[in-house]
Each structure stands twice: as structure tokens, then as C-alpha cells.
Image 1: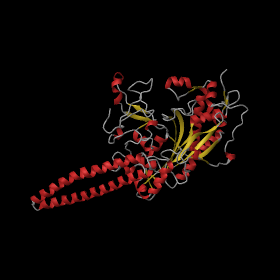
Image 2: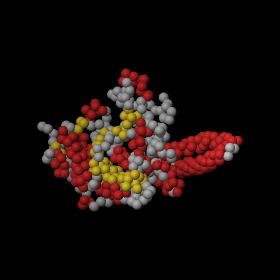
Image 3: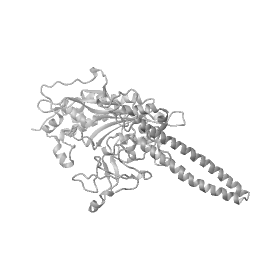
Image 4: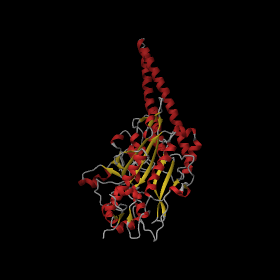
Length: 518
């Protein structure tokens, strides 16, 4: 089935779900089409690289308020190509640049032609008025015929053409990632990441164990408090049921993080929606490129007609993959006074990710789940302060691990390992003795004005009439499920019990350790 303005792909119905009510966009075979009520003026194709519209739906030139700045690309072609080459971006950046500049030139020429026609139309209108005032009906009729032809040309070959070129430009730009900062290490993947130096006296030391340390799932299952089998019956793979003291420990971790970030680092706690619209996901760059990594909801149909209706479903709302999405979009289409910046937000939410492409990775345990909880940090600031804000945000996330007494390291990601929207990213990797490896527990990124352009989020400098795009930053402060894993593996005892970190004891009612019930 093909609907005008949409691509068509099969809809994935997962085993055990009610057809027509539950639809999950969990991999490349999942398809959920259709605009949210707020975006009915735009056509959407939620497939990688397909057409998708962002920015304000009433914008006459959508590329002016979203995505990478075409003026910057035009003025800095070498930097644009170099940045994409360092990311390993495909298609070939030089060819992409040619496409963009060709479209840009066509658009500017068309706009100039439209403006000339509009000026001619205005002159004709005045001449028609003069002709009628002087009773020269023949001249007036001749001018009105020319006006009619001009209006037709203006619509057909002018305004419609500008709209087509705008949309073509927007679609190209929507699939282009952010340009890396100059100080980001260049490399194809994680092998080029660089470990940052930190004062070893301020990093909790690795603990020495008398026996081989166990992995978190071995510990949790032995305690009878971590149940993957029941979770699989309820929801399928990559879910877990936490019970008793472990459920409380996860809650304690989140409460500790929120208290730390709000009381000592000045973040404002937010309780945001977990379901968001497509333009919200576009703003933070989850759409269009990463639609297959998301879970979406579908509007219900009559269950009796499910078999016939299965191809007629429309996407409703998206489950958030991170609280970065609603927190960053709090400033969407806003103009903020500079005096109010920076804005700093934090939230503890469930997160939902399809983990497309993760087949065979971390299949046991809680490392990679479809549903997990995270304390998120988001900052909105000015271009002049965003670099310092990244250091501050990373320090806030590090402080969580310092107070928990868990060893960690900080790495700066290479150009080939960074996220789509990031200009620069620090990963904090926590030591897991059961795995004998460092694993990511937080990513802190500065996005420059990349997301701000997609959201049309601006600020007005003090004393200025014009506005500028804000800079956005996001980071985990930290992933709560992985913090639970780190506590289990670093605080395990030989008898299978878990010592409760001192900083968490007030949140655990004074509980000293978690042990299996005898």
C-alpha cells in the first residue's frame, strides 16, 4: 500500500501483541507512517534518508530555521567536506557538496526571479490604476491580461519551484550529521578514542578480589532479585524484572543522582512526557535517520478488523529513547533572554530503544536493554559558553561515580565514533570487574547550534534586537541501570552479598548489605 507523500514498508507485529493496537518500530522491517496532528502541513517519510520536514511548519523557507547552515557550507566548503570525511560519512562528501551548492544556486536564482516578477506585478498594478483613472480601458485590459499571465508564471515557475527546491535542500540537509569540533581526534571508530588524563588520586581505585569476581547477572540471579526469565515471558528478550532490594537500590541510585545534580550543580528537575511527537524527535535528530532505532505507538483500530486494518495504521507518538528529547525541546520555537541562560535541566525517566543492529551484542544481563532508566542532564547556553559547559556537565557526571566509589575513566570520542548530532563527546566508562572491562555509563556531548536549528530555538543577546541560535548540550548523569550493574560488580562479596555504598545508605533505610534470603 502506498499513500501519497509517504514511503511504504511492512509493519512489524511482534509475537504476543494485539494486531492493530500494538505496533513497535523495532527494526528495518517496522514501518509506521503518518504525521502527528501538529504537523499536518508537512509530509513525512520515516525511513533513513527519506523526506521529513522539521522546523516550524509555517516557515516559508524551512532550511533557514533547521539543520546545518547552508550559508556556512557555502562559505566554508573545505571545512564541510573535511568534517564529513573525518566522520566517514557516505555518500561521498565532495559529491554531496556539489549537490547542495547546485540546489542552493538554483534556489537563489529562482528567488531572484520571483522577486523580479513581484516587482513587475507591483508596477503593473499601479499602471492598471493609472489606465483606469484616465479611462484608457484598452490599456487597462492589456495590462490586466499581462498581470494574469504573470500571476500564473509566478505560481507555476516561481513560488512552487522555490518550495520544491526548499524541500529538496531540507531533505538533503536532514541526513547530514553535525560537523566535528577541531579538537576532536580523527579516526574511523572507537579504536581512535583518546583516554583523558585525570588525577589518579581523585579516581576511586580498582578493588582487589580474593576470588574471581562475578558478572552482575550472576550476582542478581543468585540473590533471587534479578529475573530475566519472567521478563522474557512478559515482554521478550532484553528486559528484566528487578525485585525487592535490587528494585529499591535502582531507585536509590536515581534519587541520589537527582539530589546531587539539583542541590550542588544547579539543575532544575523536570518530570517530562515519555511520549512525544515526531517534530520533537526531529528536533534532537532522532528522526529521520534513526527511525528504526525507536519504538513508536499506533492509534488503535477495531480489533475485529485488525487483519484488514493492519496496513492503515498511522504512527501516533514516540516513546522517548532518552530524556534528552523532551528536555532539549523545552526551548523549541522559543526566544530566550540571554540573562536567563544557561538553562540546566535534569530528569529521571525510563528510556526505550529498539537496539537495531545490536543482534548478538550483550545478550545476557542488563547492559543493553529495550527499556532502562537514566538520569539525564541538558544545558541550553550561548555559543561563547558551550565549551565550558561541556566540561562542567562531564564533571557533574563524574562526581556521581566518585561518591559511589566506583572506578572509571573518561575518553573523548573520535570523529567516527561520535553521535549524529554531536560536535564533541566525552564518554565516561565505568570499571566492571566481572567483565574485566570498562563500559560506557555516560556520554556528554555539545551539539553547538545543530539541534537549535532543527528546533528553531534562539536567544536574544543583551542589548541586541536580533537573535541567535542557542547551543545545546546533553549527557547522562548517569545511566541508572548501568550504575546498578557497577555497584553489584564492584561491591560484591565472596558470599554473594552486596555491600551498599555509604552514599546510598540513607536512601536504603540504613541497609548495610543485600543478601539472599535464607
